[in-house]
Image (cartoon, rainbow, N blue to C red; front, side, top):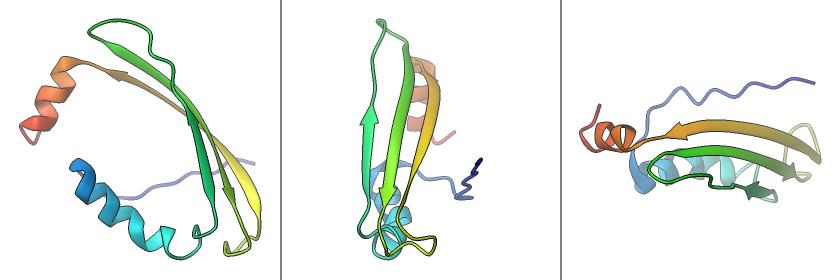
Length: 87
């Protein structure tokens, strides 16, 4: 099974992330858990390879189930500067 999630939002900072996620966590994900594992490899540039498993309970419309997600990202000082400048 393949699933795609699109939040259709650009958020910056912890407060905006919390505000975006709060409604869904108060409803269908209220009895869910999420596990993340991130391994850092290098100085100055971070390559993040994150695997997570979201386990949802009976509050989800599809009933209890688990979804695995793989996220790969490259983080650089330039990316941090752009985020700080609102780019």
